[in-house]
Amino acid sequence: MYGLVQFLVGTKSAEWTYENEVRIVRPKKQFEKYRGSVPFKKECLAEVIFGYKANLDEALDLKKKMQVFGYSCNFFKMNLRKDTFGLEKIKI
Image (cartoon, rainbow, N blue to C red):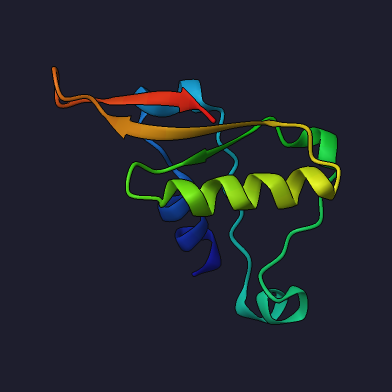
């Protein structure tokens, strides 16, 4: 069963491979043990992208907090493009 869940949640369309996204799926026991956190080296985080519905002030606040803790990655926010109804990634 875990293998099926890993496949369904961890599989992305080929159209999105350019994102190089990492998805982590763990059994509930591990989730409870780590309370949802996944330890990793700070230098491994390349960027944080906030969705277009994310509040900009809250995104900037999180960016500031992460920088205080030594994260030096890039931060972006997705915005709706009014001319094409697509999305654009804006550095914040």
